[in-house]
Length: 157
Image 1 (cartoon, rainbow, N blue to C red):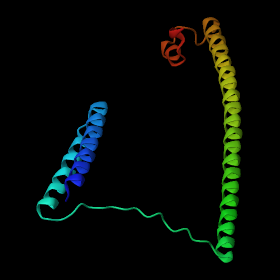
Image 2 (cartoon, rainbow, N blue to C red):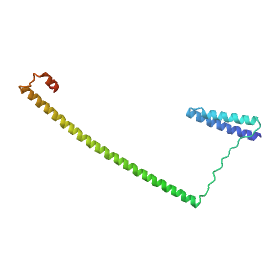
Image 3 (cartoon, one colour):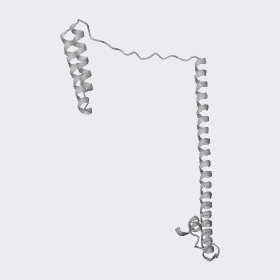
Image 4 (cartoon, rainbow, N blue to C red):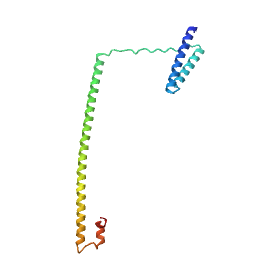
């Protein structure tokens, strides 16, 4: 290597190290510095073994023109995908609509059942009051029959 290329390499290394230090300070992570150290270690070993610098080049990927048949195949696939997506969205809407109807039906049924429960509960209370009133005036059973009173929960009211 010549003296000029060594100087250019040192400046490049310094810029890389400075950038790694900046990133490490901003993020609080040492990974960029470790990577730079590893890079310098590899380069110094290559230089010590008499090998040159590693040159990496990235070529742009080649662009190919699709044939008419391939274009038709791509368009057909896109159309199938659009159709499948449309069917899926329709199915989702239908399922959602069915769930909403089911919820409304269950809520309506729940309201009806609660109303019926309240009605039956009031009817039960009324019948218990009538039974209690009857037992107070009934000469044959009366309140002297404790077993019967306990059975009908008359002492709990």
